[in-house]
Image (tube, rainbow, N blue to C red; front, side, top):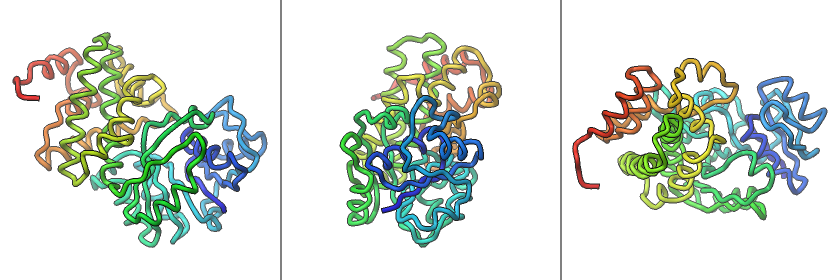
Length: 323
C-alpha cells in the first residue's frame, strides 16, 4: 500500500512519519526544493520539524504528478491554497483533508472546496488535538476521522491508525471541519489574553464562551453538537488555547503584548490559519445571524480596527444574558 502526503510543513511531515512508522512507502510533496533535498538526502526536515530523524521509507518530491501511483493521499496544504493543490492531485484517489480553515471569497469548508476541485475523488477529514512534534514522536494522540461513506471511513481509518494514533469515526464532516476552523480563531483570542496578562480566569472564560460560539455557528451550518463537543471541536480547542506550541495562540500572544498583526504575520514562515479564517468566519456568522463576539474581537485586533483595551472593554460591557 502506497500513501502520499501533500504539504511538507510540520504537520504534513509528522503525518508522513506516522504512516511510515511500519515501513510503509510514503511519498511527501514539498513546495520548497531544499526541503525535498533534505528529506531525501539526510532524512530530516530541518526547516519545519528540526531534530527528528525521518523514516527512510519517506521519499520527497516537488512534483505532484509523482503521487499518481498512490492509493491514499493526505492533504496538508494551507487552507487558502487547498483548491489549487487539490485540482492538481491525481483524480479518483481518496483524499484525507488535514487542513483546517474556511476558504476566503467563497466561505466554503475544505471538503466543499475539494469536492469542487477534484469531484471524482472520495473525501474524508482528519481533525483533532494534534501538535505535530508529538505525533511525529509517537506520543498518544486521538483524532476525529469523518467521512460520509462509513465503509470508506473504516477502510481509510484502518490505514492511518497506529498503536499511539487512534482515529474515532464520524459521518459528520461539517462538524469536524467547523471545529477545526473555529478553534484556530479562538486560540488567537486566548493568546491575546495570555500576552496581555489577563489571567487564567479570563482564558477559561474565553474557552467556554468561545465554545458556545463554535456550537452556535456549527449548528447553524448543519453540524451535530456531539461532534463539536468531541475531539475535533472541544478537544482541539482546549489544546490550542493552552500552549505557545500553537501557532495561533502564539500569534495572539504577540498581539496581547502590543505587537501589530502586520508585523507578526510578516515574520512567520509557518501559517497561522486563524488569521485568514477570522474575517471569513465573521462574515459567515453575520450572514447566518449567529452572534460570535469573541471572533468579532479577534477580527478587530487583526485589522487594527481598535486598540486592545477598547476591545477588551467592549467584550466585558456586553449586556448581561442567560448562559
